[in-house]
Length: 304
Image 1 (tube, rainbow, N blue to C red):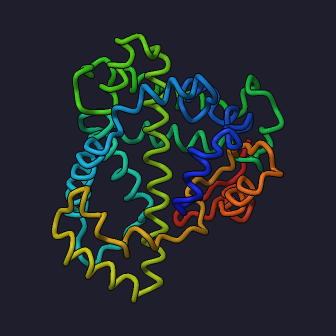
Image 2 (tube, helix red, strand yellow):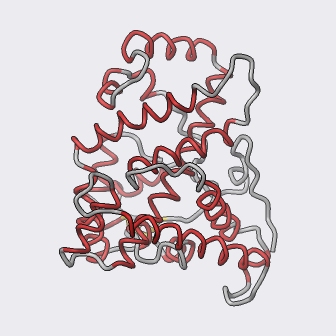
């Protein structure tokens, strides 16, 4: 993970041609995100990125932040003092409900299982320890059959959601539909990008939050400083802009734990370039065997 601003600038601006999506990542997301920004490069990526851009302006993100805080407060109201909770099991539906609000403009409650099942099927299919990795996708292994079923259900769900979206709405789905109406994106691109945001936006975030809870349970001093900061700066229900004033919260998340328990890889062109090498070496490797399945409460074990 790259967190230093100067390195982020090198990756995304100054030296962006040295960092691109590799063939392994495209193969990982084939059949589910083929036309998404997560699986494309060059002019195609730029066109997709342009279509998404209006959904991620500063003002829009502030609005998302407020809605995220409200959904989180609603979720926490269900907890009772003394409860013992599986935090990953709690965080995944929470992040999905937040995405339902911000991406889809409505409630996803009751439909979480389909999205979670598709995310799990994707991770299982991409597991490098799985014997079925040696076989072509057309071989109907149990893992491949599960993947096809789960993706089919998710495709149907996303299509139903888009059928109810309006191009003039304030959610991401509406922004993508507006791009389609302008002729900037095809419907396949609209659907694949919304699918990608649903999958990546809920799963990696839920795993990261689980790690945060785990680390806070191990470090009482940090936990107390965060609690004090939240009470004095943020209050009961924070707004998005509140987090600009919470350095303890935003700067201390650990960087040595993988939030994506599969190795999808990115490709760095020109390893002789010192700047590219510096950025590459600063990134945590999320795909070695010691990292896969290391998520608290989650196991990613090989199968067929």
